[in-house]
Amino acid sequence: MDIENMIAFNKVAELKSISAAANELNHLQSNMSNKIKNIEKHFKAQLFYRHSYGVELTADGEKLYQQFKKMILLWEETEDIISEKEENISIGIMLSSFPLQLNTIATQFYQAFPNKKLSIISGNTDELIFKVLNGELNIAYITELENTKQYLNHSIKSQTLSRDKLVFTGNMKGRSLHQLLSDERFYVSSKQCYSYKALITLMSNHNVNNEAISEINIVETLLDICKNDLGIGIVPESLALKYNFLDYKVLPDEVAALRKMLIYHTTHSISNAERWFIEKSKLVFRK
Image (cartoon, rainbow, N blue to C red; front, side, top):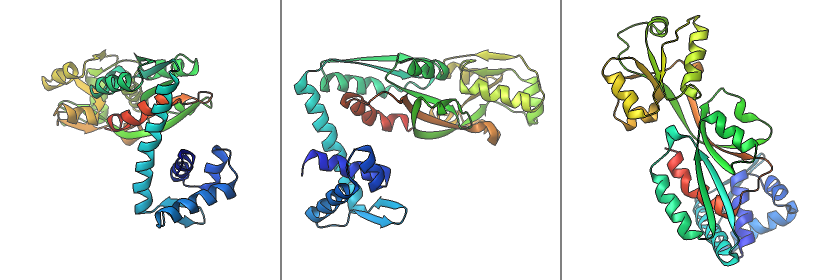
């Protein structure tokens, strides 16, 4: 079993299509089909269900996919260590959603790739998208409103990691949404963030002009203000739950949905070290 066959198998599993995988890896479709059949023959198991619209993994196939993924990452890591090729990797992350676990991943990265230089740069969504487009960042992790089309820029590739919802935090006092938008002071992490965009959209939809909006970029402080009935915050539901703030209400559907995404420029080829970082961090950013 060679590494190329493992890569081929996993690409078919991810794209759920033998023809699409063959096209991406520049293989003939017949050769790709033979690779899959030979792997199934080797393990004496059916690894894919075949459908008219493509393929999907069987239970055994899913187990093999996960094992191959580990082996491919280890192989690529080994290649980078032996080659001693220097590489500068710049990763963009939103400060408001910077996970502490990332520090551990960064430490592991330096242990695995001692000749790579890793730079982690924070910013809001707009700043990170701009830096990806201009080649200042290799990859970036962003959070954006589900109905925002900005991330669909033809020069950006994106991968959805998880979904979330925006919530009002604080005492609503039984008021209608129109009353809340008209009378209350609101707190968002930044006037460049998705929370502010959602609030401005709601005010526009309800013909409300309320300039009582303050920026608080420390989540604990923002929630403490709301607990003391000094205003209403807008944060992702995951953050409210993380800080055990249960007095919240989900925003209206048109502005509630969020998605966390990994983005990079279409001309950027993901390196082995970057792929290692992405795989290690997926569980963190999916929370």
